[in-house]
Image (cartoon, one colour):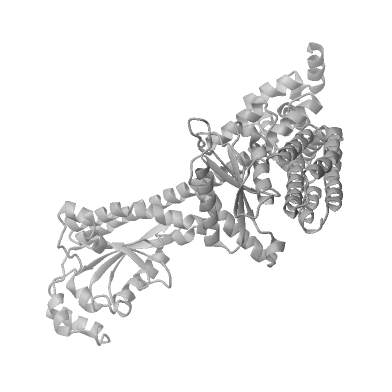
Length: 637
């Protein structure tokens, strides 16, 4: 049959699920063909066709069909000894001119029969336009017809002279017919009994029910597969975010990242970062909608390639770019095999070029011993891009005085992460002085320093963004790195631009640190209180949903909340649930089970245990005498 473009009922599915459904249907074709061959061997009516809409109006012409003809060409026909069998009577081939005139002959009958079974939802035994008996059985799913099973092309009574005279009247409009051939074929049409027709109809109805149930199972399986794919995609993005964020090395961070790694199929933790940079909307000077489409088109092949590789994950993070985390194999001496990173980079470049016209460059950081250091590999990849015009730029540790510059830049980021802002400001002021010592009279050196300051500022913005600074403010500062190359014509201008921009980053971090943890905890508590006040379901309140709304990771949220409130987020939420339950239990119209459900408890007995832990009494005791129950709980406490 070749590759199918559709399957029965595939037009009822969303576009993204349709192709998967067709692929699954193709896997079952061998079974369907075997079924048709068994019918051909065991029943008097030997031909069966499964017909469904592929495009165009109803009717077999312009539609897709799978039937006994295709089954006879399959391997199963040889196994069953069905070779050289032709279940279709020669009469029909003469009528439709061996398929050349099907639309004006057999197609008319099939179209009318399909319309009838679609309207009635029931099987139909009918006389075709040219005198033979056919059967049409609908395949229905949720009240909609997705396909039709056809069989027949037989006679109820033996051929006769009067019967053929009637047929000549029926085919009078078919000018291409040879009546002598038609008469010879007519006398060879199979004759079957009413019982035979009933039997084949019942068999096809059972098969139609199987097809319907199979359709529902496949559709549900594909939805579940799509759901898991979406979850996996989010897990990859979360994994990239957490690894680039680094974490404080606590057991919670490590276990969370390793759980995500196992979930997305990593057998080895990533040790290297590759950054894909596409030209910006301003650089390519195209309308915003066209740029968004091109960007999405470029992102798709990157994700597809990475999803097909082992120990590779990619995600596009806002203000960070397309980051690819991967495990770069090492030799026995622990040296990284550079060819793997460059081969991956070349594959990504080629895939993007094949899909869109956006210019693309790729930076590659060095391999790290620990996943928590991958943020450094990301910064190295960004530095490589800033310091080179190559399409694929690999980070190399600077030599001589530039090595000292690089280490001081890394120290600056570390001070920022450790909240040592006064020391960070000193480092910012010292960097231009150290840079002046490295600067020679050569233009190339000045350009290299310009690129160094540009990359260092970008790295500072990345660190500040990860710490939780205002994204828009950091993005505004991050637009200025280009000024180092485009505007600074001498060392003085370079120094002033650096001090001004880096100082703004420190200012944003200072505003963040003034009461960041307290703000996060207060906002979380306020969000929970407001959600309860406005009747938001407790199922929608979780540390992941609250942390996502606040723009921080769940692990960071949990640690901050515990430090500022002295209790875990989960305990605070449980207290609020019990507090809300107390108010609901005061209403005599609410019973304990209803209150448990409204407060997000699936199990009433579990609700009772939690309620007693915080209220000191059972929900039933509280309902009967709330004042006495509270007093008794206080005495017991």
